[in-house]
Amino acid sequence: MTKNESNPKSITLVIASKNVHKIREMKSILSSIKQLDILSLLDFPNYTPPEEDKNSFKENAITKAMHAAEKLNHWVIADDSGLIVPAINNEPGIFSARYAGENATDKDNRKKLLDKMKHLLDNDRAASFECCVALASKEGLQKCSCASCEGHIIDIEKGGDGFGYDPLFVKHEYNKTFAQLSSDVKNRISHRKKALDKILFAIESIVN
Image 1 (cartoon, rainbow, N blue to C red):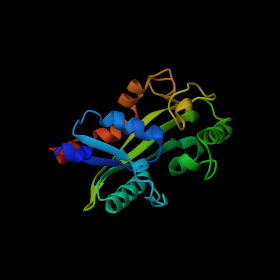
Image 2: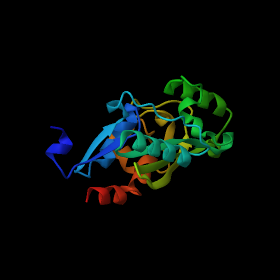
Image 3: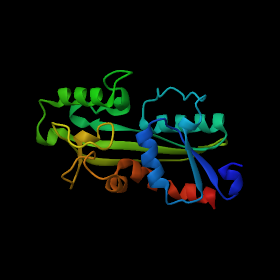
């Protein structure tokens, strides 16, 4: 008997990601909704996600959510997110995860960013994390919301937690990078938290 069968009020929600850090973060943010049985693409090894070839975070999030919902026949939540630095033509933007190449590691991406920003000082190091989250069912898109978190990029990595560009990003009014903050604090102030908050009501209405 599956968890869903043992609890008929439980709703399966699939996080359309294989990134263990992102999955953990989203599960923590969604933990307040007790009736959710949260899975991820790690639970569907035979599923092949679509290419992230759109021109915006919003379009990519919607594409991922709708594709997974149709193929897996479950409610799906998908996000697309990245870092924007206005002083370098809004890079890395939608290419944040593959900034230094298709098979680049987070470390490779951070190194490329630091190299490109090494001549920038003070206000020119302003940056923002952007996130769009889409909720879909097999019937199609239900809701999509976007949010941002503003701050700046420091010139040396700090902190051992987090992932992606977290060791370089300091949010306004904070003196620690995202990688130095506890997960509880980060999950209260992040771009992903803000975007998820905007669709929590939609998710709760599904459960109820």
